[in-house]
Image 1 (cartoon, helix red, strand yellow):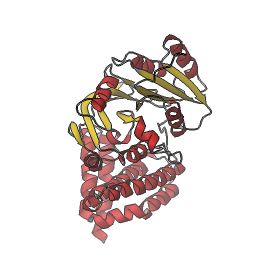
Image 2: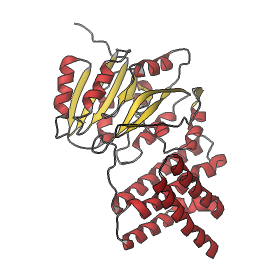
Image 3: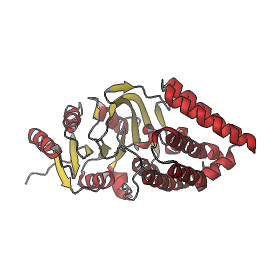
Image 4: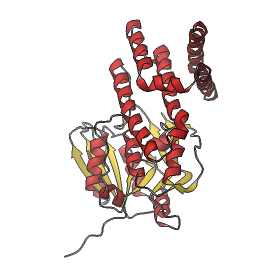
Length: 353
């Protein structure tokens, strides 16, 4: 009896309503310079021709495995992919993204070469509705300890660089040994929480600054995209952020780096407040009573209150200014002017104190 050899790398691709993009995604994986891979596509209840596209590709390439499940969300889909994976290393890719030809090879060699580590990360290009948008370089390349990398996430914990799984490669042995899964009760930031769970068992991390993934944002595509916001969506988002923050803070405390980075940790909530205030003044087309109610809920959030206890009013206002300047740099003048108007209102509130 012939014994089938397990592939070196399992790439899990969750897909939902991806008929227009899944073909390009799979082609980019099939054409990798590192060929010892299996491509596990989990169709999360698509009603378009996503399944047909994948099955057709699988007929041409036996490395592609197709699995269908009733619609249950990206976390359940990825967990099924983990269950089906047999590789030594595990990677993830969204169905509307694609990768450079040496994506797998570069990450695998980092895990198994002289710089052997437990987690490797690459940078990426961002394409929004067909237009390339530059991605800033957040951290230096090279090797560091897991603890050093965890502290680096404080630069911007919500940034895609840290908060996604598709620019990373994981050791399957660590995932299986510690039963690391995507949290199915979290609908926002599930990638980040998965990465934090994994980091608890990581000795070293290697960062590749080259852009090996093309992240494509477009509406009505992958499972992890949010299209529009209603009041209940915002409440769900804040509740999810509360859950993630509690877990993140606990992880930082366990690593012994929470106390000295308290202001860095809580600036996350100042920025959340700014984003929401911007939304109330520009993006959320709700009636004034609903807007007022949501504003009160934001300011009543325990973590936002704690954040304000660590920052002076002057410091909070400086964050509003920096946000506005950031929008100008990004050529979003209209958005910047809205933030400036909000800032004027806040300045008046502080003057009355």
